Image 1 (tube, rainbow, N blue to C red):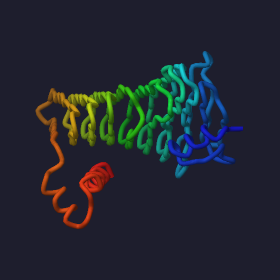
Image 2: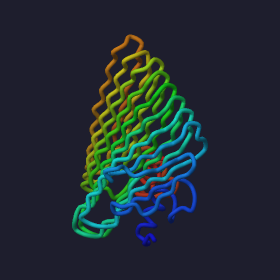
Image 3: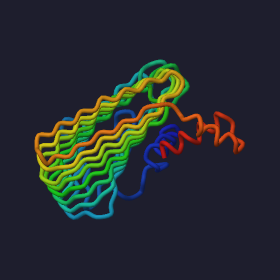
Length: 307
């Protein structure tokens, strides 16, 4: 049975309010499995050393999903897990992960999730990851996700990651190695407050003919929070890579972008775009003429920016 705190975290992170009655899932609560189910086409098995799970998706699996959220409701806890995804050829699946922390104590509650994806030929993945922190205590919430992708020929991977509240520190590391015709699209949305710190690092090797990568980061830094965005695209064949960082600074926030693009082939096309600045005054004025207060206008602009 899940308590109410864990149920609320589960609903926010994974969109489900309790342990499912069907489908493939593994719910991790305070460092242990709180529920698991495999299906005929998606098997979830524990690693022999107990450090995580293997998710094995059979070739040709279509229109199925798997949920693997990690939840923490204890203070002074460090949860470290290694999850490997083995996606068979021609599969088309959705994976819902993410982490929620509810810390009402004075200690540090931390989750480090290291995920590796081995994506077969012609497979398609939609990966959704949401991170939240909450709690009335004076402790810290720390979430450090890592995602490492090895994509075989003509596969497609879309990652959609969101972190908008309550995480004091995060270091988000993503890497990908793409074979011929493979595509990866990574989208992230981040908002930081107070003294929070968020660091993002993308590292993509475009190794195959005709492969492509698109990295998109949108963020808002409020109060005295700090953010660092790093991206590295390495084009080793005829390929296409695009990295984009758009950030809004408010109050005393700080955002830094450090792009790197390396072309090792004459037919590699690599692009980086970055825009960092405050909310435009004319945008605020226009909304305020419609009857909104300045705070309401700011909220509307931010919600639209992060939508």
